[in-house]
Image (tube, rainbow, N blue to C red):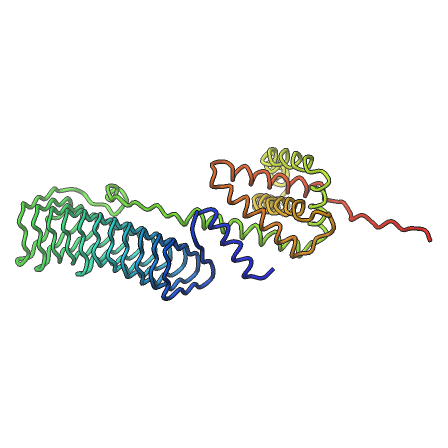
Length: 407
């Protein structure tokens, strides 16, 4: 089975899990001049994208460079994000570095280490970052909230503004009230605030001579600490849809690769596991369930016995570390055994291609069941118990020898 087939199959799993119309998964994804009416979901290391997307844009990856017109919502998680264009719906982004310059019809929620915001946002704007800059091209039609170590505001807000930071610098126009909780509040010469200013902090606000403030200026003396308690009122609504599908894709890919590796290293051993389940499916499942139920007790007992001796202490740590990987391997074995039973009707020794394809189909089906509450967990538990029981039953057994016929 080729790598392209594997990627397509894993993408199918994500599509089933997310209900998405399309999936692009890979190390680097480049989509220039794209023109589509449905959703676009991407999971990749580096993403370069331009064009039109009629539905949602959702992505999880390393670096995003996007210049696109999106007809609905945008939800991106990455190492760094550079976004230009238009968004008709809401925007939710989280990254180490965000450069955002787009016109947004809904709300915008941005979180990162450094965030630079430009463009017009019709809804509410909420930003949480270490350093935040609202550029001169920024226009916030709704409420603007931000929390970070340093905030510089050079744009225009048509509504009220609330900033929480160690240092807040205003060098733009606020056509509403300004509420700050900061150690330092500075209104530079180009600042304009048409409403009142309510500042909470240890130091009074510094208002330069050329700054214009139409309303009252209130200073409430309060201690300021650079911890999360000073930002608890910040309303960041980050609900990233790609996380669930990406976790499912990673889980499927990990189990699949682990199962394939086991089939390549020990082809006879994995064949015996599949044969044991084929011969006694109920017995293998029940044995696996019992072993899994008592596995914590067995694990603790074994660790205690090993810790009695000085030599056994390193082995105890090794056994503890192997517990969850072994259960995960049993899950892969369960998918392999069920796939062999379904697709290998004759029961003859299966080749690596058939073994891999059948196992992948079962893993995808089990992940797709996750759209129904508890069904996906139940399916995964059944596969793990089947694999664990068949694995134990196959230990120590040899392949049947062919019967010699007398001449």
